[in-house]
Length: 587
Image 1 (tube, rainbow, N blue to C red):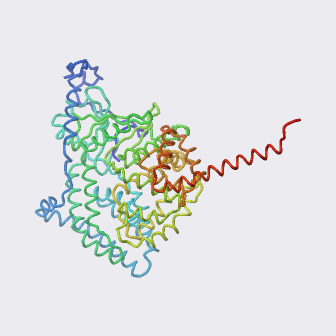
Image 2: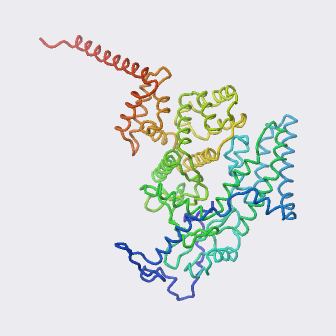
Image 3: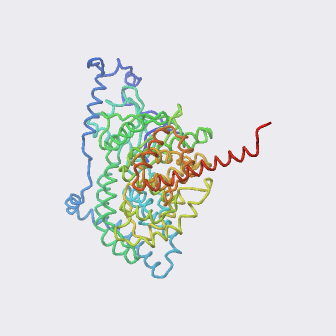
């Protein structure tokens, strides 16, 4: 991504001063030296004029609407009048895609589609990469859609690099000045002339404000909005014809809804005010952790196409300059924070790859680039945990019914063949030892089933799939012995035992179908949960007692529990009697 922050890299570029030589603006200013930093008293608090202006800009940014909310009807109105431009771009898109689909259909008719699938997947990735920023982003989104594409295509699309040459400084600086409404020299003391990162949507410079702070300045590519808007309009126009072609492959896909879903996501990503809001929300939810740092957004110098945020000096967490112990600790912090994001708070960073994370000198993990975030509603979070429990129990029928309830499978679908497919695909990967278990295998096996049957995955689920895949890959890069399941299980155990909203997963995990306690599993859950920071044994005991007393099938559970306790007491008594017989008191 085009995140802002510092890591190891190439040589230092010369600094481009933006104030005349000798101007004191090139030296870090103290608060009393800052231009316009007049102090203003508010009761017991004293604020500088700079701080007041920053707060005003922040309030304005938070209340602003998304810049270009995706509206297919508005796109139709605009682009129906630009027939020549649309026709030219339509040819650039439709010719290679239609020709490619023709080859796949011929493969299918000749019975060699599976045999040629890897080669076709490479060809498809090459076409996507050549068509511009909207298609690169679309390809990255498709890489976590096992309901739409077979595994070979997903694997190739995951290799898509959002890394292209930078555009000229003159254009970038002109955009910055136009967006901010003032010369750059009024804002920045200096800017390095070589971008530290360049991607399909924008590029990042390192600079220094006239008030002394080092910042990352992210600026959007020229005409980026217009290019993306036209491409999505054309894709939507083509979606009907492409859907008909895909039916020849015996796949019934609603490509128009897929295009519209993608349009909403990318329109939010190209609005840098929205990215700033995402960063602030992330900081509010997770910035209080001693292990996590979120850079500050400078709202006065942030607009829809320019984002100015605190510069972070740090090292990539996979860097060999970090010790093995440091890398392992950072990965644990990353996984635990990600679990809290997805399963506790519901707002999460959806693109935690190596370029968006830095190890700071003080040991904290800094998150960068908040263009891709996602949200999980409470019932969806509980559904994910329930799905984990069904997999642990190998209860694939209940897993299918859960998928229907969550909307992954259309109501009325015959779930028997899906249940059989899951029971054939998952036991081997779920039964692997902790040393051999990996999330990628589970996602791959689930993906095979989801591709073969009529699954329709919602955006939050595909964002989680992508996030978990990226997390595991990054974790293994940093520490080859790290296993996410080993690190995640204590957190999941703690949640199941202490969250009153998770009584159904608790019932499924701790009790068998007849209402008997699975004592070994309960013991395992408690032992693992006890290792987490927020483990509350009193809350767990109270919740377990309330569940036993108030559960609809509590009668059977209480009878079985009483029987188990009686049996244990009888066993203890018998052992005591035997001990007394074997060890009579001395005369």
